[in-house]
Amino acid sequence: MLAGVPARVLARVPAGVLAGVALAAGPSALSERTTWIHYAGRARRRPRNRVRSGEERSAQPSRPSAVRTAELPCASFSAGRTLTVYRWQGLHDVPATWGRSVVTIGVFDGVHRGHRRIVARAAEKGAELGLPLVVVTFDPHPDEVVRPGSHPPLLCTPRYRTELLGSLGADAVCVLPFSYEFSQLPAEDFVKSVLVDGLHAAAVVIGGNFRFGHRAAGNVALLEELGEKYDFAAEGVPLLADHGIIVSSSWIRDLLSAGEVAAAAVDLGRPHRVEGIVVRGHQRGRALGFPTANAEPPPHTAIPADGIYAGWLASLDTDGAEVERWPAAISVGTNPTFDGAHRTVEAYALDRDDLDLYGVHVAVEFTDRIRGQVRFESVGDLVEQMGKDVVTARRITSSGISL
Image (cartoon, rainbow, N blue to C red; front, side, top):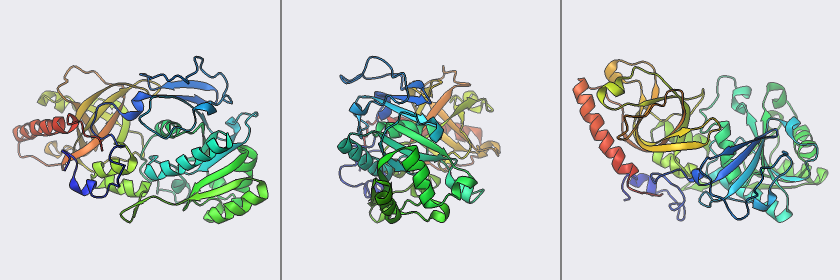
């Protein structure tokens, strides 16, 4: 068994995947590339430490319609390449000059391996036709609108989702505001207004279980029928399954809620990441010799089960680009030894007591679970165990494992 990687996780990893999921080795895969994210014409560069390719243009695109189709597709997280992706907040942001495109639709929360299969097929179709790829997604999550109060925990922020989709070959991500009125749109009206009139789709690729339109009346068969009517090709991509389990956002959320972050990383294709602004807590960690960054995530963030984890802490700039990262021991929970009631995510950058991260946007990445949360009889017992946890976290994060 690879050090730090549970046998139960390795047992369900298909051949060829082990080499593609970075769990404990150094900087995140995305830090090797730059994605230019354009918000209705405003370009935002990320990440900061870029690796330029020979195909990179020296000038930043000045218009949201100037898509670099020559650099599409890019479905690998390891190649150093500069990517451009536009983020449109609704159809009104689509440039008037936008021509035909290949479109894929879905929530794509987490952009996991199942999603990557769908986007990869859409990117392949775009390359065949010589057309840009547009990913259509939704905000807020449709579940919250259709069943108020049922908003699922989100596996990534909208900005990170855009970056992940861009790294897979998307030229644009169109975020449709999902409202009650929108949910009442008949399936054909959705196709006509969004795919045909809005994005001029030449081909549409969706997951085999994707549904659209009022009462989820639309499916692959109806999309194929409407494609003949409105002159676009339609294709459904079978769902990805490992050992009889469908790789889905819901399944990954279940893994995280059980603390199975290593297994979640396999299905995500990367470690699960929680972002937030560092806020002041009780500062007990500093007094105990382990100063932590208390990250306050946005609402509806998918947070792993209470416990202690090994992983990484990264500081991000105002555009979300990674600035610096450190191996970390991470605590999730209420600090029961001190009768805490508020659930927190705190990360101790190993062997660093000189960091001032208050007010900084950070990302916390979870590699593996060390233990569950425990209420200790004394502060001395807690400090002793924290020392052991740090040793374990150091061993996991320094082992150079790449799943």
